[in-house]
Image (cartoon, rainbow, N blue to C red; front, side, top):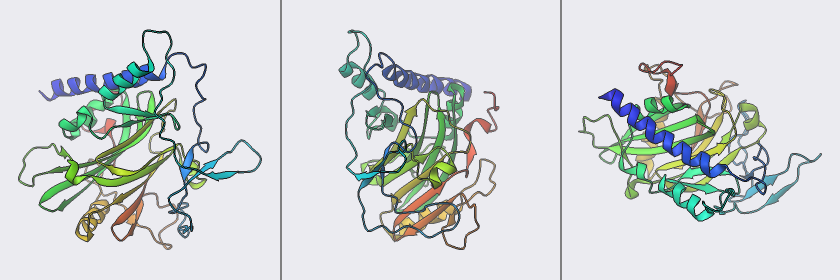
Length: 322
């Protein structure tokens, strides 16, 4: 039964990847080149600047973005608002229009940010009806979705909560995800429900391909702050290295009790064998080279993640060559 379910889920995931691949193909004559790290519009960095225990930046300007051009001899910065353009790359021929491509992508539960050339999940995709369980991660390995993931579990307001992060390779895409899930504490199911509209969280994240890119602020893309249950971003044309990328996420708890739960969950993160790989609170005195840490400011968290958790293709049921 489990084997059959894995195959079904793998087929569904493969279909989603095919949709993204198709909408990215075609006549690329008028398409911009794939955006390289450092070329993307990015938020002003008001958090951690590197992994060496240095001070946090505290710029006077907030809520803005900075465009950095790295091809010139000097860096030029301008402040501008992120584009909301969702136009897809042009497709060849007359039989499949831009509107058709957008409709197919929407049916798959995704949209497209043309300014960053990033695919992302919508607020109410079909996937929201199915919840989430570990079996999905296992199934993903069968369709060349190989990523690192971790879970921060806690109890709050009569529910069991799970915050789960993912980052890595999704077929032809590289990217990351942050999901919010809940379930009844009396439930015996391994599945969590996708958070409903009363349990969305304000979230955002920045994606860096390497620690070096992170330290140099060469961001590949970002997902701006918004209430969501499954904040994602995927970019075509890159190959993710295992445990090489950096995700810097922000999320806001509802109140102090929830923030305490999130903090405890981050500190208790383990791999899939129960070995502790928890996050530490950022401080000037933390060991140089610390790679998984958070800063709490009231009920708001900034979480920097490199290699906590485990890889989905190295579970007990799936070999590295699955």
